[in-house]
Length: 590
Ligand SMILES: *[C@@H]1O[C@H](CO)[C@@H](O)[C@H](O)[C@H]1NC(C)=O
Ligand SMILES: *[C@@H]1O[C@H](CO)[C@@H](O)[C@H](O)[C@H]1NC(C)=O
Image (cartoon, rainbow, N blue to C red; front, side, top):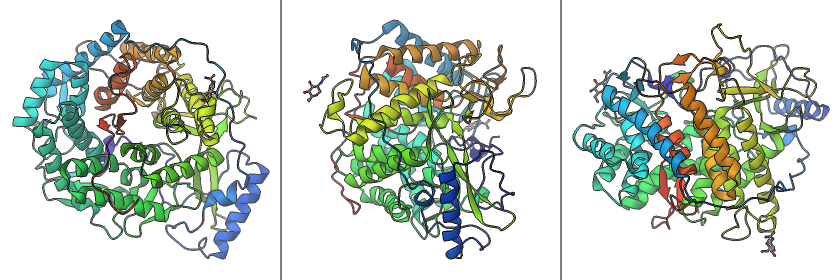
């Protein structure tokens, strides 16, 4: 029986993750910081000392913005849109490739349906299902897959899935479920099924049932949600693994779903509670937009913890932009928060690779110095596959929040974008190329986590898998590919915004690698344990996001551009499309 917390999409059990409650080792700055960095660090330590924070035991709440002290000089914005403009924009469907993606979906779904229908998760090699908890399934895989079937026109499969929802699905499960995962997969999936069926009441009824069971998670001193919920008892439950803290992404990735449900039902409770979270985050924000990964639900404050764009942070940034887009770009407060965040990311978390050819994102970690017990900050040149959503997100933001006109050209004409939009476009384009580069491995699949080399590092290549072991040895965690979608998600957005055929070519290569190495002949797809080892070793798990996200974004990449246009839909972070609407429920934040 799998434990729901071990399946968290935004969680990874790496040794390197420091939690805000651990007492760190002697800081070992593996990388020589720049002198500006060092000077700023000393300044930060001085300030913390002055405030009496550095000597206190236990966890910390930021009152100061580290970025403000770290890197006082903003970077030069990237100016140019890469000059490559010589291609013919043709958005017609590539039918043979699109059909190949549909065939892959059927290969995945039919095995699940044969062996594990109604179970939350699927193991294609053992040919069995498991549930998140012992209390029984909540439709995790079925609900997550329904909108993909509808888009692909798989009517028979769809009819059986709907039948299951109608006659077998129950949410009355006496166990703790992750608030964030349940929202993005189940609530998001129900709402997009409602949308794509032009309003099949069954899905709205189920969505209301689920949301009502979940609403008590917001009953905390601050209004930030508890990270778990007991669906039968209808109570929020603090996360025992992390001393009751909630991760930033978990708190801030419920809003598209609860807001849309509020709009559909005219029940402002859904809207207000989700929006209130954003108000708390906005008030707690560090002055220039840097966002640590943990918050306290009691205090409504950020905790001293890692600052990064991968797990526990990623979809916070995604949803800032998408909340702005969801209601037709009228809620400028989200655009301001988004702009601040993108500025902070450019100032602090983006670096150029050793060869100078790739842009990538890095992380900063708090460490307490053993000799004087003071806080220090360390850069780690590490990028999760999860961060690969950011390239497409920046491109989408550049052509919406960062555009002078309501609708930009395809590809955007530089004069249509604001200076910030031009910067974000250029960074987004480059980050997509970097993520594609991480697929240039023996298998053609990307590792879960890559590290980048310092300029002074004599090793070969711009990036590497840390502590990688030779084929035949037990692989490190970072070396795996678990069918993740973020790169093909960015490729889909980049394709729709540019019409550049290279994005389809990249997506097709990735799909071929999945077909070659992840496809289980008897049905389904498995995760790969080491992307640099061929033939591959499998892990017996088909993540639900293969059917909800990876294959959906690939399908959309090869469909024509009338399918889910980006100016009519926002995708939730599990790739469930929700329509852009004019809000009838208007609450306090804007
Ligand atoms: C998972 O839950 C469903 C009920 O929803 C049940 O039919 C199935 O047997 C459970 N699976 C396992 C492995 O216990
Ligand atoms: C870019 O847009 C401006 C203003 O709309 C227009 O004058 C110019 O011709 C456009 N350039 C290109 C290359 O399309």
